[in-house]
Amino acid sequence: MSKSSLDGVRRTLLAVVAALLVWTSTIPAQAATGAENFNATCAACHTVGGGKRVGPDLKGVTERRSEEWLLKFIKSSQSVIKSGDPTATALFDEFKVQMPDTPYSPAEIKDILAYIQSGGEPAAAAPVRAATPDDIRKGQAIFQGIIRLKNGGPPCNSCHHVQNDAVIGGGVLAKELTTVFGTMGSPGVHAILGKPPFPVMAQAYKDRPITEDEVISIVAFLQDAHAKQAFQQPRDYGFRLLYGGAGGLLILMLLYSLIWRRRKTHPVNHEIFERQIRTE
Image (cartoon, rainbow, N blue to C red; front, side, top):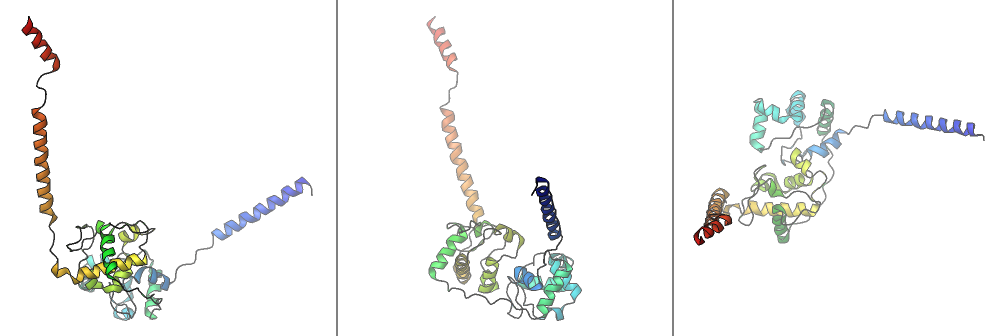
């Protein structure tokens, strides 16, 4: 085959490949189904016929609420609550948790509602290993960051606090967790740690998920903290910080005063000059 023929074949092949690339790039990606979106976003806080979790059981919600209300609430529950809507306000007062805004379009929300209306078919939950006293101790250490999370996620007390005599005071950026086990129960806490539905928490653990064993340990610690809360003394770190700061300032002032007393009051050249004057 001549060189010109080979060049022609190459050009033809390149044209075919380019056409295939253009054609495949115009094929829209298959949209997630209502079931997939529900299990990815909603299942951590809600069930369909399985009882309350972080939020209400959604069985029959399409009969209790209008589609218009559900579309607005699922898209941005916080906006509906702020508008003074009595139903949204009552839900917040009952569960004390605002549902995060969702990124779904009206069509995607309708697919989720259709899935809920069908009764839902959530995947059967894997059996959870029973917690042990070692899990409680490990969960306490993980909560404080004494034991690092396997995948490198931030420790719980960077944002949360638990009233427990054995735990260093935590952050105040997010919900206080002393009673969270009593409110949500093991399934709710387990679901949130395994698949965080809240935007900040989801971003923090997006590429650094908490492992199943770590989840069990943290849940065990939170259960123990809830059971023992009446016997724990609240810690007021404000006065400790105040007294510690005042003590540190006093020590620094004493050190500075000792150093200041030993300072040279005149330059060396001045002392030499004075000696010369006296000898003349």
